[in-house]
Figure 1 (cartoon, one colour):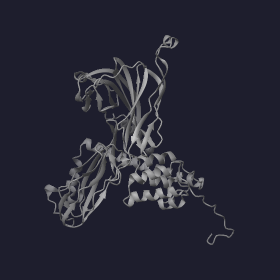
Figure 2: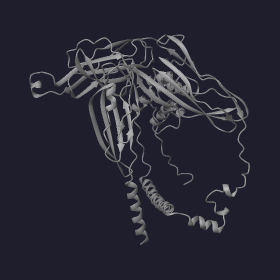
Figure 3: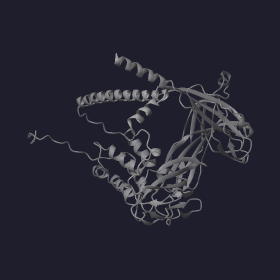
Length: 557
């Protein structure tokens, strides 16, 4: 009888918790933050609520924008026993003027979005008239890049007729790596009095050697929306094809006087996000450093590391990277927090962090630095002092030992109905937790028995060549080392074992370069280049001779 009542109470509590409404949220973003006059930008608004959400109020947009193309998509999501409606609204905005325009905050029911800045460039010279229904344009943000410089490559597909389906391809050139970046941007543009829908696809192009680099033309094959008579008479609609023109880039070698490691950038800025006002012995204080690199990805940037501080231990947290595509090229913001723990009193000096790089616009070496910091380390706080005796006015509530029996009974007698309900709810939660714990332990024992009965099945060697190439291009060097260890069969304990089991001399040299980049002050960019060339076809492992079974019985059975 008691177990049945407990089950009913548990079920009732679960139903009550499932019926609680989820907190509604709303957010807004633009597919681009810089456009030209005459182009459109898409404003996306996502709303999540437990009930049907209200359409945004677009009236504030009419002051600075022409509004068109309203669309919405709704989906139901079940999470934690709760039903949530997620709605995505999209609307095309065409600015009425150039300059920096703020997309105003919009109301979505009882919630409100955040204002978003948008940069609108003045309209350039009118483009030539085009007669094709579909055509392709491609361009690089720098026609004369340096070797290993991150080049933004943009492919734009123009279509004067609505597209039903299609595929846009861009082959990688010989002597360079090409990787797609981000999602496609879609907008509209007027060309010669004709309205075109534009799909903009962005790539990251990194030349691997100097000389003339030929980028193959982009190709499109698809189908446009057209009526029966359009297809019959050979008009617009039906099958559509387009091919861009091949482009050539003049890749320059790294200058002889360039700083090492080689870091070609458009710009690099450093700043302190936060610094402590004081330091105390044994207490941790935080210094946060920010680096913004224009023309690079996070994988190409050197490690942010503070210079050593005499008498202070420095503990670095993992780097936080925010990568974007701005003005047709990559831009990354790196943020890293450092904890400073002084070991003694006195003065502490932090030399300014410095990063040397090559300015690709002016063709000169540059150095970005942070100003030095200094503190006077104060004594640590005492922890062994005995606390002052408690007075009746400062006694801690709930300290039963400090009150008499009469006071304790009066205290519990003052509990209202609401407090009793909370106590009962807490007891019920505790019972549910115990029940879940016992059930989980039972399932864990069953899983152990099932696993043990399966035996030691041989593991399948991992096939992660594609993941290894991606990690070499964009991942952390530590992740590259872990991937090499995991690709071995059986997995290797560390890079030393990986090097011993590799059969190719170039791959062993690349692993040595990786070790120097991680621990010996080597160049991360050079290590990635050596790894990219050596492991282009995957690791080459030495054959491990089969272990013969000894005919003698074991010494200790």
